[in-house]
Length: 296
Image 1 (cartoon, helix red, strand yellow):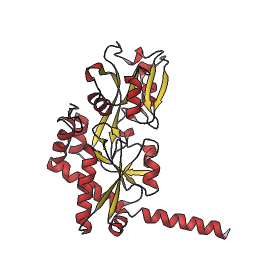
Image 2 (cartoon, one colour):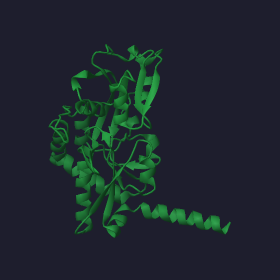
Image 3 (tube, one colour):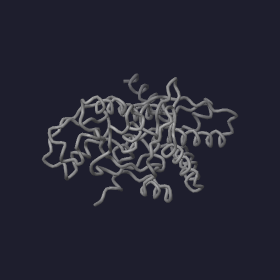
Image 4 (cartoon, one colour):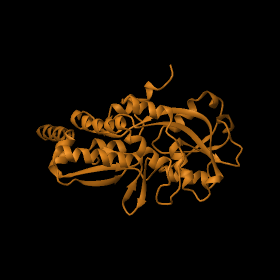
C-alpha cells in the first residue's frame, strides 16, 4: 500500500513539474518542438533532422519570444517527429513542450491537452486522380478511401449527407505521405484529409497535374498549436506571441511565404490563399474548438 501511495505521489509530482513549461525551459535552457514529417506546408521534414513549414516557423518565433522573456542567452530547440497517434501522449508526458503540426482543436482533445489561439482554419476535402471522374462524395460507392491513422477525416465523410447510402472501404496510411502514396499508386481511389495537406502532397508529387482536389467540403476545422493542459503561464506566453503576430500582420506574411511562394526542398508552390475563416481567426484571436464552427 505504501509503495502504491509513493508511486502515485511521484506521478503527481512529475505531472506538476511538467505543467510549468516555462520553469522547465528556463532550468534546462532547451525546448522540444513536436513536428510532423508530412503535414503539408504546415509542418514537414527537409531530411537530416530538419523541419520547415508555417507552424514550424510560428513556433520558432514563439520560442524566441519565450527565450527573451526568460532572459536566456541561448535556447536549444530540439525537434521531435510526432504522428497523429502519439502527438497527444507525447505532449502529456513532457516529451514535447509545444506541438507544431496540423492538430484540430476539438472538445474531446481539450480534455487531455490545451490549444493556443487558432492559427489556421482548415477545410477537409478529398484528393483524387484527375482522370478518375470522381467529383462528388456520392461517387465513392464501392471505392477505396485512404486516410491517415489517428485522424478524424473519414468520420466527417461518413457523416456528410451526400455519403448516405454510400459504401466504401477505408485503407490506412501510417502518415500523410503514406496515405497519399496509396492514392498515387492506385491502391486507393481517394484520399480524404485537410485541404492544405492534400495540396502540399500534390505539389510535391512527380506529376501534380495527375491529381485534383474534388468534392464537397466535409468539415471546417480550427487547427492550432498544442501545449500541455493546466499550464496557464505557458499558454499565456504562447498566445501573446501569436496574437502580436496577428495584430502586426506578420502572420499573413509568414503564411504567404509557406503557401503562396515556392518552398523547399523542391521549390514547388502550394498555391493555397488564406481562407476567409483563417483571416477571421487572425482578426479575432480565439481558441474555440471545432464544435463552435459546426452549424447548428
